[in-house]
Image (cartoon, rainbow, N blue to C red):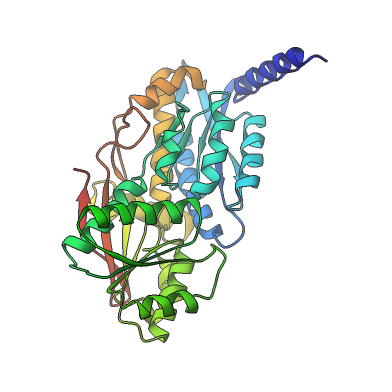
Length: 382
């Protein structure tokens, strides 16, 4: 087979697969919505949180008996476990394409999202991001990538400005987990600190699988840092906080997004008291539909949501409503409706700019008081 013939065959197969994303069974159109997230390993709880947010939206949509171009539709989940591994994430992306999904809700890890995005873009399948926040994700020029959560420039930028201007910290330390998310969040934090006239006195890092941080924290203590900004995942953030307490450090812990959850509280225990973290969006219980979402999520799954289920839920509804508006589940037909989204979701108002980023994002600073995360302040984009 010649190279040209092979490429022609692949293009034809991809076209067939996109059509299969809208298969028909007994007069009912079946539309598959893909989910890629870590469902095993250290990040499995957050991955399951994303999957459950999508599942709740799909179940509600099916209960509404939605029709596309006059035909009944049933939405189905096609879930892939990317294990927070970029290599596996690309394999999962290709499998979702092969399974004929019409849209994808993912990712949890920026480092997985970046290489996986082009796999979907090549066949025109949109990806709506509920958790991955590295700014580079929407800067690849793919045209089919959208994010309904503030990126690191917004969230970590707010953290950097706040530490300098409001907390009046003079000696600031940073630490990250060397992932695309952690490294990117610290970079945005550092930019904001310097722009606000602050000073970074020490920068440390660990791998995303580390469980011991004594060396890094001893260096930070020796640097006499007022504040430590940690960009990483909730379980590691909790271990860092515990070790800070064991070392007798008085440095204020400030975390990046995805830390202000029950996992952090459980692992950190009493050491969590006083810890701070910047989270994406406004407090859910302060929004018109937020409190209702939290209640129905708890009723459906028997536990509280973590950070990302509300965003995954909204991302799914953005896709479904775009399909409904276009009267079609074919990406070429409904993606323009995604770009034109104006939706009041459980996380707030959702609309996209030309790059697929959320317009008017906001982030909220939380602190552990009495063993619970409490919102201190919310800052919207300028």
